[in-house]
Length: 118
Image (cartoon, rainbow, N blue to C red):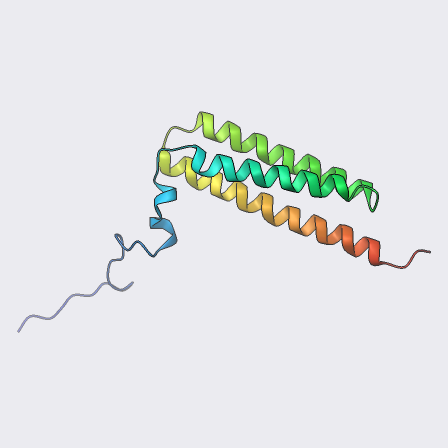
């Protein structure tokens, strides 16, 4: 009787489409898949920071500068990285970082506004 061999990690899930690393958006050669949503996110974040300038101008400018740098990095990555998977992973990471930092800075602006004035 043969024993089934099972590796220590479990059955191979290389082709499992439910895993994040196997999603079509990470393998497609189309640059716009990540570029268009990333730039739309940048426009929305810059608008939010511009509107919040009267509340806290310093954090708003930091947010605008950060989002602009991330958007430029998205465009540079889209134009310079040739490997599809590597490019899409970097662009997804940049978009996630842009979203997270924008959220943190906008919450900080609102929190600073809620503090009592001395």
